[in-house]
Length: 508
Image (cartoon, helix red, strand yellow):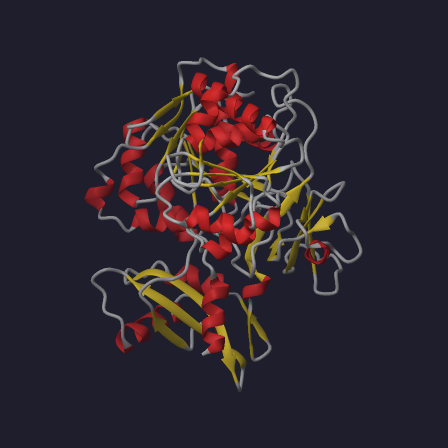
């Protein structure tokens, strides 16, 4: 299960506009050449390679070069500031940086601020960087006798603070004979194979898009890359390429659902067999409406960049257990624990832990944060800070992240529940609910709303939104204040950087 195992003339990667294609033969040869270049430059198993790029097909070459060289690959968000990106490159200890063109001074600034790495390759001809293409042309395409397995080491998106490097144990074996954990999990779950055409509408520098790109190219499918998510553009790509598999976040669903009906009807969705979604809780009504549109093809999983555990749920299961993110049967055992660390009974809300036989990851250069993720009495139980409960049948229902819980008058209020209501209002393009300091209540609930085109922010709309919430959930959860903003801070994969918003309010 590696690129060289498939028809060399078959398309491994295509861009959504159809202008660029990378065949399996090219992916195999070019990733072998890059691996040879990196070995010649002194990189060996356990070393770190950083990549700073948009959704360029060559990023998949870099991924496979790392995987067949025993390297840790750290993909860096190219929308970060130079200081933020340099922190990641410096923290991971990258010995080489590969980057795309069109990033201006960012790559050079990152190298300067990070005090390295010494090896820098640019996809396009740029002063100060070695040429990626010339390096490949001068390297050998001959496969070495042993190709030790590498793995990604990605950084959290920083939604609750400074990004953390999530370092898994370096896997054993040869990349040609030992499939990755993600391939072993997702290939049978979703039916990935040589007939798969997979649409990636999200940036490859995030965990799920990168790892699914790896699964698709490990199983002989075709990966369709969008430069960035666009609601109608995604529908057009599905129709154009006859996409069979795809992955989404709930924000993307919301934006596609808000397209005019005539726009949605313009594009043929009949090729879709599996539409995977994850990364954030999906409002129940949004998922119901998507299944009315696309049919019973929505498959959900709950996991994290840490990969400490996973739950799965298919469309038929979800209709029986609406709102659930599934059961944990393949990677770790679910444990729900109270603030005292004691395990809770079904139906009781607490912190979500996964029990594994050994610690599946550690935070790079941060033993204190690693310890915070571990259960105080069971070190092989780990959490990423999510809150939820399981029912009598073992299905997990998420509530929110512990860091975002609002405590008002001694009562826990979970912002996700309020956001799930507000995002369905036609005047709401995007929304975040946070707790702001309150001298009487400790915290009060504030909704920060980005209005849809054609809607007018102001006191009348604020009152309308409060009444909209009041008609659907308990009155004590209704936002005391509704503020309006031009744009909310989200990562390109749709994750809300709520800490940035909350800190701005607390500073004010």
